[in-house]
Image 1 (tube, rainbow, N blue to C red):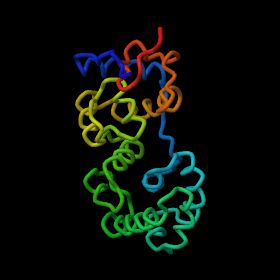
Image 2 (image 1 turned 180 degrees about the horizontal axis):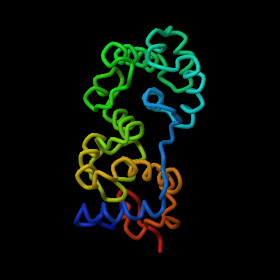
Image 3 (image 1 turned 180 degrees about the vertical axis):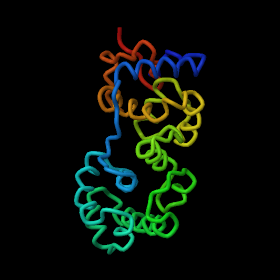
Image 4 (image 1 turned 90 degrees about the vertical axis):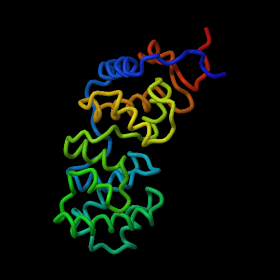
Length: 223
C-alpha cells in the first residue's frame, strides 16, 4: 500500500530539512571512485555505468598502470582495453568510448581533461552525470547535482521530486538546493542509500531522517 504521508508542501523547505539532516549524519564525504587526477576519474566514471564502484576500483589499477594518461590510452589496442575493462560489463562499448574520448582529449584539449561541461559532454560516452562527477570531484566546480540510481531513488522517497528522468531530477534538485551543496549532496544521498535506505529493504525504523521523510512509494510503517 502506498504511503499516506505527503511530502512537505514547500519543496525548498523540505530540501533544507534533508540537507541539514544529511550533513549531520554524513559530515565528511568523498567520491567512491578511486582516482588521482581528472583523467582517472573520467575513465572510472565511464566504467561505472551499470557497474558498482567497488568493481570499478578493482579494475582501474591495472588499466591505469598500462595507460596512465589520455595520450597512451588514445594509442591503445582495442582488444587489450576490452580485456582490462571486461569485468565492468558492456566492455566493448566502454573500451571504444575510452579510446575515442582519449583521442578527442588529445586532439582538442592538449591531452588535458577539460574543466567545462559543454566540452566534457561532447566527448564520446560522456553524459551530464559523468561530466558533473568529474567537474565536482576533480575541479571542485558545482555544475549540477549528480543523479545516479541512489540519488534518483532517495530524492523521490524524500519528497524532493515526483519525476523519474535523471536530467529532470537534476534540474529540480539544482533549483531546490544552494549551489554550495550540489557536490556533496549526491555523496551524502549515495552514502545513505548504501547504509540505510536500500532499494528493496529500507531500514526506516533505524533512519534518523524518518521524521522528515514522506516515504513516497513505500508502505506505511506498522504501528
